Image (cartoon, rainbow, N blue to C red; front, side):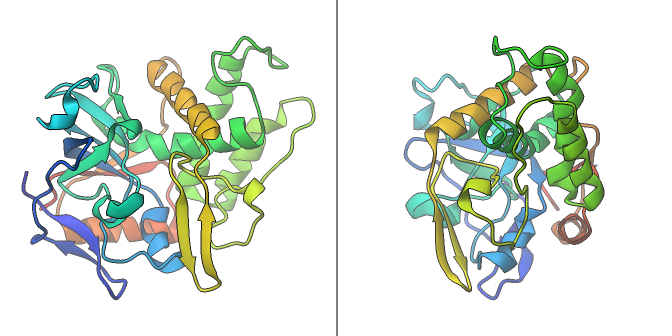
Length: 293
């Protein structure tokens, strides 16, 4: 599929590129035509904070599966609508990124989009869900959705319906008001709750207080103070995917992302919209419709 990609140049400038080579399926990866890519504040912040260069930004997406060798025994088929994350990692780390018309990405970061879930919402949900889940289930150690453990003042499902939907707003807005929503969501939970710093971009926090949008891969930060590596943690990653699975299965049943705004237009205008999200914050989620012009 042809179309415009967003690209971080060697000097750190983010541009709209119409001359990148076509994407083909890498070994053991699924080839996908992107329908929507989800925008997170970190998409552009990483350019400045961790010297992100010569790559396509973005992690979240929703798209259609194309024919490729890795479909064999994958559980996916041509034409499936899937969503998830494409996270830079390994020797091909500079070849990932969701803000482009076609991607090749590992199966581990994918889920099938149910019929009752809008494709734009599917493109917006993964990183914000993972970030909230890393805080709630890995740092705060609350029971996972659907577990048999009791939660004070109601079932876990009712807590998630009332509280988890509030947590969505924190990562996307990154404002004092939205961080207060996170505290409000947890204030009714009795017991010994330990609060952590969430989404403190650029701040120096202990690794145990870090809240991330993925735990599937080792994350390497190249910052002025040196090279920082956060190891992959399979158990935490499993918790985050389990929570997302619950959210997707229960989507639209009294629980959904409050605001999803779709941008359709040129790559240059898309960058302007992303700058607003990165610098000022915006309640809800922005997604880009592909192919960009």
